[in-house]
Amino acid sequence: MNSRFRLSDFLPYRLAVISERISNRLSVDYAASHDLSVAEWRVLVHLQHCGVVSVRDIQHFTNLEKSRVSRAVGRLEKAGLVEKHSSTNDARLIEIILTQTGRDAIKALLTDATQTEARLLKDVPPADMAAFYRVIDHFHSVLDDDPKAKAMPKPPLDSA
Image (cartoon, rainbow, N blue to C red):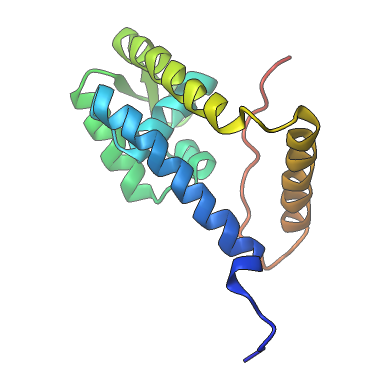
């Protein structure tokens, strides 16, 4: 064992911990106001961003297991927030779309989420955030070129 190794300095550990903490903090908002799980939140946000998508696409872009996505979609459908339809391009695929109730819910959820994000970033200089995002993009680039890394599709970019 490397005696110089410090877990508190190990980047993957630190990223995992802070990601989990932020996700847990956000889940307080959307669980309290809309009785949603983390998986359900991710599905709704992805649908809001992309429109009509398949369960498979949601699974890839949200980095959730297929079973979690399926359960989340089922619960969201039961709540009237999404609808499922057979794909017009591939009958084997089920596509998911937000209902009007779902669009209204995600609008409120995004308001809460952006307020929480603003509190987290309140004292972080914009230049630091820009550098942070460049580092994240670098990690994605390195992992995209690594044959041993799990391939992840690129999420659709926001239009400017």
